[in-house]
Length: 580
Image (cartoon, rainbow, N blue to C red):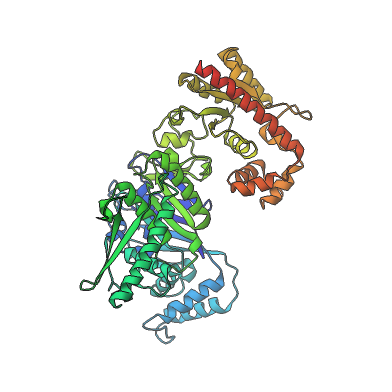
């Protein structure tokens, strides 16, 4: 079973129902401060009762809308879950076994009908692929599922809880408020929070190692176990950190057991060459390290082991806030890797480095803002149409949501290839092997290239503008030459003309015979459109994409080879002109 989507209604400033679809597996939420991004993450976190005691239950308190004192309904968090009848029957049977007072048909009519319904549901084959569970935060945090409306509410709640118990873990990481624990109680029964995380650390070192038993071991055995766990954890953290830090710093974790207090103490051992070791509390380290430690520990050792572990929901609040921006690209890649292998990532950010189009699918991004009545709303980048100004680039809604001029995100040493749209960018980057210094800048249409050219000139950016070689492209291309003059026109071009066609759009660069080959290789339906094909090809693993592109015709290879030569030639001219 896995989560398909979450819906939120009447939670704090979320008055009207909003839905977060998880199909893309990576969902960035962007917007200015106080727009409601964190509220959305906390609302999703409310759904799983396992998390009720996390963060002192703050996500479940003060759920009323402080901007609108007139309540119009209960606070409801719901989730649509992918499942089948067999999985739900198992949950029903296990839930009813846990009842302290089993259903008896002689008790009342409601329970009579409940028993009959449950027997019918269990014994009758039903085609089901999903169900929706609602949690009413305003009504004792009770669960309900319309599928079980015929049984008593208490049993409906019990069955829903059993279903959720088997669901993937929902993990929330707050970079600003989450302080890792330096001491873990060994007598604690619960396996949640940091106790559950370190229980996983011990189990992952060796299956027989547990927090509960460590205090009872004799001194020699205890020291041996702690040494094993220290080595395992230090290696894990160091390997993970190497993806973020170019310095390859070794991280050494120390563990100590206080048998009287029955606590495990965690500290950092810092040793420089020629010096004695120094010992630090985890929270004494830099904010960057604390973020990293939280991030890795919660992802690598999340305590909930039921459900599909590759479908964990990771809710990340401003990940990498304390990382230098040069390391944020590495984090962006890590987030993508997590979404492919370990779970679904919903995160909010102010950093363009965590929204890189080469890593994060633009159509997976939600823009969060508030209306004049302070009610939170969301919209996908693809359908948001009330941007602050006229839309000139495909990424403009995102940068407007961040109140950041997009042109200021261009590095001084980058060369810009400006194209008509986002799928032109995806296609060129998939089929051409351009230098790393080239950044493809997608416009919103052929005509909006004109506005972008003005900015490139004003910012002294080396650029090359490329239009489709069709009627509209040729019209705007001619308009640009007339407007900017012959010298600037050296930075302009149309797609290379092909011998068998006059109207060349980017999709025509791919030979007709290659479309069936690509659809089959990408497991797409026979009628999949160009946009779907290019999107899937672009966000494919680089090695897999290379293997697929080896199968295409010489005609397509020749078309993109000609385009690559044109781009490199034009950008060479642009760079020399800009230098002069």
